[in-house]
Length: 256
Image 1 (cartoon, helix red, strand yellow):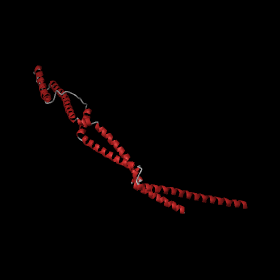
Image 2: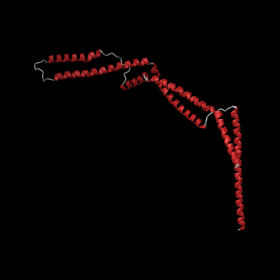
Image 3: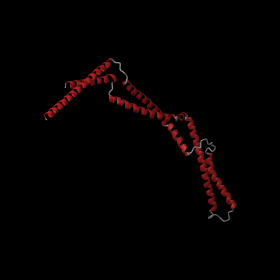
Image 4: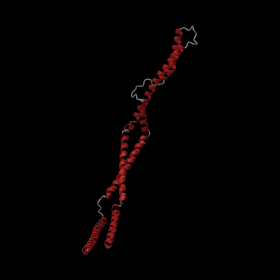
């Protein structure tokens, strides 16, 4: 019982010194160390994600810098689009006008029988000319009819260009500044956590810490001795019980 009490006392003292070492040396507990390790892993993953987004945004940086050039391209695309639409509209109007003329020529229901065919052709031609003048040529006069096609974008290409330009004009600058700021914060946080973890492994030179370490080492040795003493006493007691049991059985066999 005395040895067991001494063992318990030595264990309590060793644990007390261990807590002092934590308090005086690292100023951190085991659970806090694990939390720091988890924080470092999380910050590392966040840093990789931010870096990937930052690289993607840098690919658009030349376009953002060349904003005036993109504006000129937009104007050129608008002009090309209007000209393309004008050609389309002209073709449609030409077909409509011709359909009207043909309809008049084939409609003989109310036409007098004595109209000369040449007179009819003359007025139909005059009508065609007037329709083209007021429906097509005036529209073309107000449009840029001599635009040189430089890009000739498809609808999908134009849609992608407009989306990129809109992004650059609105959210690109704000997001780039936000990502840059978040990367800076992430690097600072990661550096702080890494430094704390590195400091835990540093060999302390403080005299008090050395004293605690020496005392704890001595106590741990004494504690080991006490554990061995207890084990030795238990072993001797077990051997004695076995010997007594064997002797009792031997006497019984002799009497028998």
